[in-house]
Length: 314
Image (cartoon, rainbow, N blue to C red):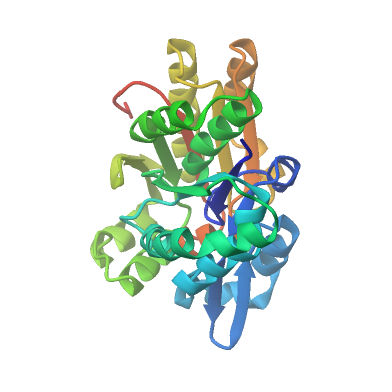
């Protein structure tokens, strides 16, 4: 059976890895004033955008996921011919419309695919599974990497599905934003009032950065640490501790809202890399998606891994 994988552009994985493993992307459109760009996880395009004058108005930007019709057309023009079963892994539905759009599109796809496959001489049925990763940014990459590993190992659909379902609820996403005022502006555009003007102003004045945590679709701060560098160091140290305890998959995903060399100079980074190497954990580093940077601001650090439940100690 030919099994394919689809992710949305919020999922932070290296472009080279996505291309090498023939992963399809559901792009998200970014609009700032009259400027419109589709986020296809092109790292050069993302960095060019970051360094352009348009990025100065990023807090005013709006993002639009692939529509139901766009997803329907992508599958019928390409994926129903290339594969017999497709897993579509989306950003958590608590933060985006991507999952709902993909679910709605899936009903029409499963109704419309038969004549297209028949015309191509394909007699086997086509199946599609839309899955909510219950996370975002770098943490989305954890389930995608495991899906690739299992597909390459020749595992069956039922086993892959059960594994990814279990992995989704045990994936832990972390993020350290660099600019709280930017984050507040973006969250208010979405009707989210979780970052108040008072906390953003006070945090900026005192240079206090929150460590944000996402699991099972719920996002909350788990620590408030003075200076961005100190917060990143604590996050890297926390991840190293979890690696030593033992992860559910040998995968650590990191993404950064800027040049990766800047991330690699952060305190605690090299210690995490050394710990992962010592324990056989593969590290995936990528420039944060354009959509992600629009949502949380440039210069932010994101991380994801799968492990047993645990507390973050600041």
